[in-house]
Image 1 (cartoon, rainbow, N blue to C red):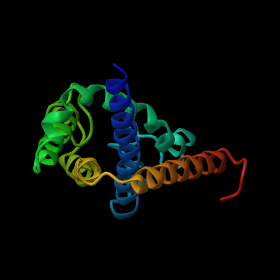
Image 2: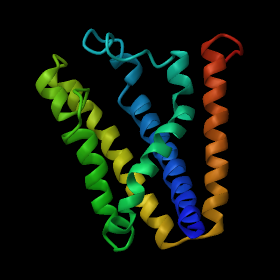
Image 3: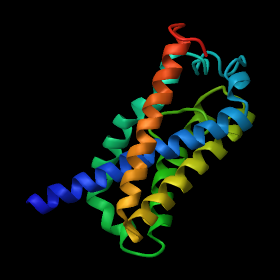
Length: 182
């Protein structure tokens, strides 16, 4: 029983920290290269998406710790399927990208359901796909890599990365509230 608990804690930390890191990297990519600041001001998206300088958006990367932990709970029973083979990362990629983009339960931007049921123009659905794919590929590859080449260094780097995400996110939140100057 203790071994299973330790295995879950290790898996949970890896999934949560890599989710947060992959989410941040994909988000920065989208913010900078896809110009989300301007896109979210468009008539089609302004009623759906918060402005990127909103306080809750600034703290969003830190809040991903919740989603990462929930993902670890969901993925834990299936971990051997994608962690036991060399190409297991592809199974995980298909699972993550598949359910988030092609088989979501609700319609949203860049999803198949959103394409059918929302009035968001096709170009906005297509613009969000690179962010989704970058996240899915990065998360899947990094998790598989961490399990195939486990080292204490990855734990240390992940703690540092998560601390930096919390710091940057908190500073962004404080700046968006006008508490500190950006």
